[in-house]
Length: 219
Image (cartoon, rainbow, N blue to C red; front, side, top):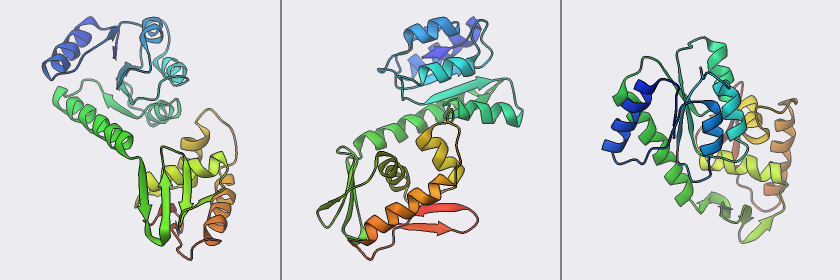
């Protein structure tokens, strides 16, 4: 879905995307975007400067029922604007005026990432550790580990992105959400509990601490 009040931009993006094999739904304001946003969308291009509802508000409301990538189109370049874009549920942003080829490449990258996630039903790691994404459970040597919902979500985030370091703030934002207020120090306690539960079944330490940076799933 393309959401922008500039008809020329909507026309340009629609033509480009349709030529490249995409089916495009267009919306010229925030109200239309909210009406047309469904779980069947694969990706949303969303202008921040909409005439009725702010694009950030639209994103936050869409995020209540849509999980696909949301890419902001914005003329704003201040750091705070970028931070707010991510905090409301955006996955990426591209500044106006933009390169249509770069935008196309970013769209392809996000869709590839979504396909990898959809196809990833389970991952097997050293120490007999299996993360079953479909069943939302963790097993060690065939025995299910009793994790809380948040503990599982942390494991899922880190294991899907094995080898990538996440700081406490980013984990908190991805698991609890940007709209929640809380102490990211709670992540330390959740990581401690996850490690303890895994240690009861395997001597493999799979969540590493990268001192001064964050945590890493060492799979």
